[in-house]
Length: 120
Image (cartoon, rainbow, N blue to C red):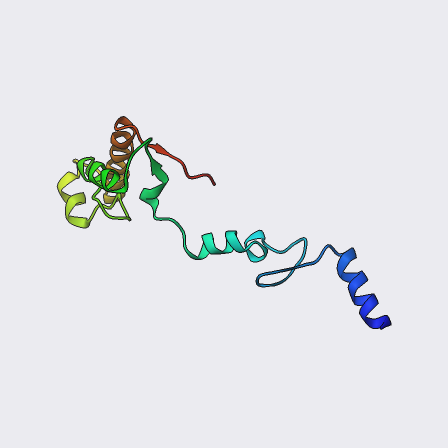
């Protein structure tokens, strides 16, 4: 009985708790102890779903993404090698072209009334 009391007292004094994945202490990452945070880490929302518009639907967002040049998949904006080569300007690297296309896509989505809602 004394052993249980000592273990319980030790756990309380070290601020340890039991989370969904085991024992959580002050230096344990929050996602390990918080079931919702853990699920968000395991199953993140697709990037395009962070672009929201008042009274906008998923199909409208995908259509607008396609019109802005980023495609209509959950992984939009996506620019394949062929599209990057076609859009490449003189003296521009593939990465610079991709970054320019992404900036143009973000600007277009903003002009259509979308806002990026992801917080870090």
